[in-house]
Length: 194
Image (cartoon, rainbow, N blue to C red; front, side):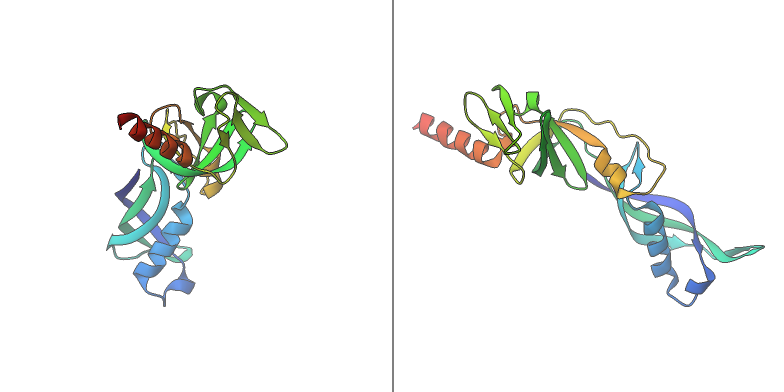
């Protein structure tokens, strides 16, 4: 889920940026500092999108920059337990499928793909259900539910940290799975009612 949050901080404006619009420089500096940072309570900071208040600059002896107290709005992505996601399968390995869900990745373990037994086809790079012959390939669009969420704080501001935080997902419920599977189930249900 995406959230907009207000944050207070101090931003350093270097002297070579003094001639640029203060608010524009502050947003750029804050984005350079915080974009991609993970926070356990707030989630992944996507971007700083607005400055609500910027205070007068203060100078520190020996540093030519000005320091401004700011209140800004930032957009965060924080997956919630039991949240449903639509995503794209980006990688298949012997133990499951990695799914891109917004700015983070989820992992669907082979035991959570279907109720059927799953085999890994290494040549094809796909997961194949033994009895139903359902397949899961890279590029497939899927709907999955977050089984749990555990985000650890990251001290660096690299978006790759978010990619390395995998959210466990399941597709073993009604209206979850590869989009084609969901549509097939709807058609079968419709025919059964007729």
